Amino acid sequence: MRKTLFLFAVLALASCKKEEVKKESLYPTTTEEVAQTPEEFGEEIFKGKGNCVACHQVDKKVIGPSLQDIAKIYKDKNADMVVFLKGEGEPIVDPSQYEVMKTNFAVTKAMSDDELKALEAYVYSHLK
Image (cartoon, rainbow, N blue to C red; front, side, top):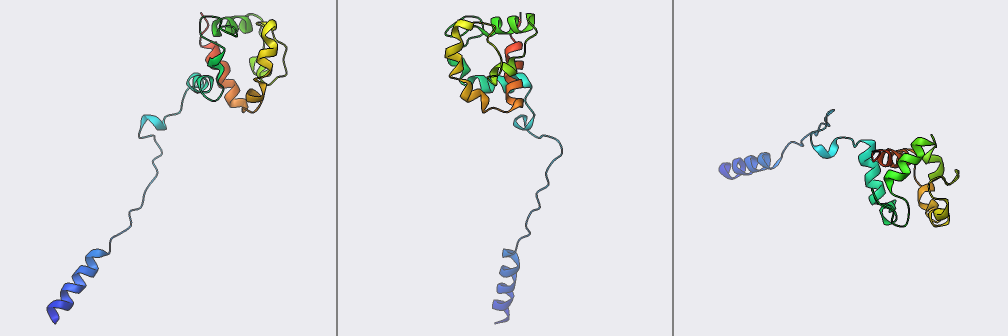
């Protein structure tokens, strides 16, 4: 009987385990935890939820002007791309396509200022 009680006590004790306390690191441990650059974030939006890639390419006009043309014209005119993407600015790159772009303002108006600035940084990253 003592052996049975002893065995039972050992099994009971062995089955109790300490809960591991998880500490959060102050420094990223994987590359996925490293913050994106504005250009990388902008590219993600451009190709993803913004779906800008459906009408714009880096170096050629498709439906809308190329990113290189947009960046050059906005830089030359010292214009504010974010204001335009909010639907508050005048078209300066290709006014003939404004009505097509206007339908996409529902998407861009829903974006945060940080997202719009990231898109702007991505477009400007294509300046030659």
